[in-house]
Image 1 (spheres, rainbow, N blue to C red):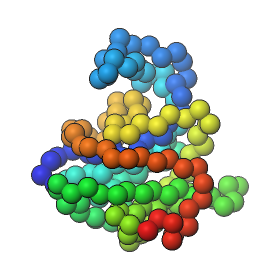
Image 2 (cartoon, rainbow, N blue to C red):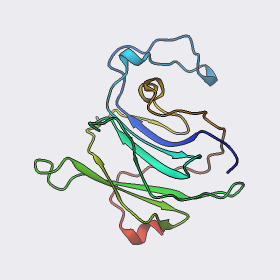
Image 3 (cartoon, rainbow, N blue to C red):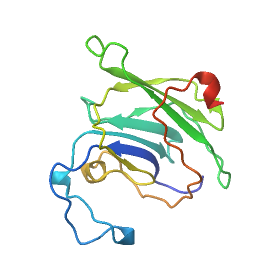
Length: 166
């Protein structure tokens, strides 16, 4: 890929803590939420073009640093199928780590990633192609937001097995 920046694949965040205000500064005339009024709960997945790997960050991370999957180069000009599974801790009292597994074009990336579990409310919002306002204004993720095309998208709240992902 000859572009620099980050492709934001998925960001799930809690609803704003205060009222949504703004003058429609985002495309399409939609409102925005000031960083001071947005929920701090989120789980974000993006592809770092320069480092050629997927990274994930949850609001529960104590270091505020993303956890990254192994290097997984993507070919430019080719559609890719991306599937992420999130498995919360089996025993929340004993472990705070959730497991993320990522599949690209039907093949699992070599390693599962453990991230601090995040407790999202049922009213959580999904951002596809852009980070949530809290993450965008934090400076954790740097670089441009290159344009990219999104194909059919399916969000499920059911458990998928390894065979379901291929």
